[in-house]
Length: 68
Image 1: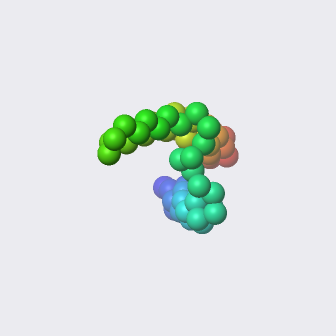
Image 2: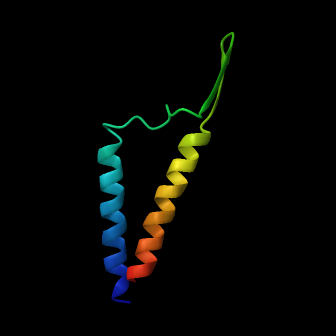
């Protein structure tokens, strides 16, 4: 059970860093995100943003699993 506090600290630091970086980087306005505006209706489908977040999270969990 001694690995759980270390894992929680790592996850906390990752969440803190991501939250800090999101102030300066506007995720959600990437090329590849679909935005359809018709009249007063807007449809937004963030394909590129979803792929980017998936890759980043996969790398984070890969390294956490590798060093655990």
